[in-house]
Length: 126
Image 1 (cartoon, rainbow, N blue to C red):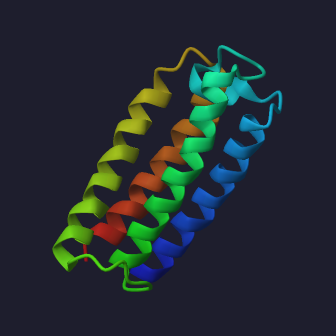
Image 2 (tube, one colour):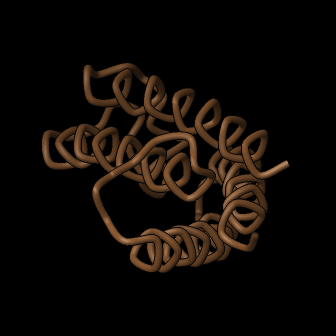
């Protein structure tokens, strides 16, 4: 179950990475991210979207390492702590997205964060 949860989280993270790349390249879908204030993101938020892709890759690596699917060269305890930090990050993301002024962001990203929080908890907890 842990490996399935880690793999599923990585699939969701990959989809989010594609979304963030599209935002960084100027796709007019900004209503779903960054508070929904801009249809096409300004440069500073495009940079934030690009950084998000790297963050998602790091999160995926942490979850895969916690599930025993890859090694990162970190202690098991460090990976465990990192997995719980990831879980907390997505739990906080539920709240942040739920209070967004953007209805599309609330409707799409809140449940996405909830799914990622749940999957991350499954991976962090074994």
